[in-house]
Length: 177
Image (cartoon, rainbow, N blue to C red; front, side, top):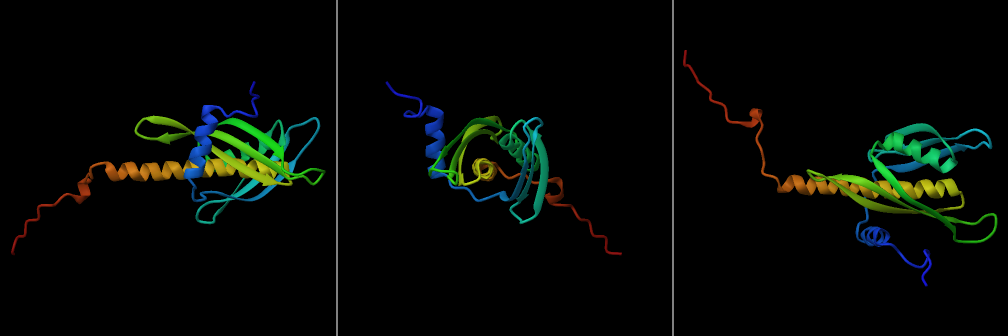
């Protein structure tokens, strides 16, 4: 009898295989994260990301746990619709200074003339569990954004070229006065 940890569902296998084949360029990079946790109130996360041009973007969000508040802050910056399908964390080492390994699976929308949903996987490994989670989430988002950009580029190449009104030849009449 197989346990859940020993078998991979089809969606997980597809995400893992496509992750090995598809290595993205970083669209967003995590620069800094600050978390405020409380036992009664919501957790607050302030996240700073750098875009592809190096410009810094900062957002703050509250959530029911530190990871959720950090993901929400990232979403405020990235502004791409995604659904978190899976979030898992394990330790790679033992003790209080253990390294947390995190894996997330997100579903994103790729524009293909009609909406197509595709899953993207990200992994992170840090001593700080929240940073590990955000790195995994960022990796999945970067894969999604890079895929979307490359897909749109490929589909635009296959479409027939259209000339705008400005590019059409103009009739010029010269009056020799």
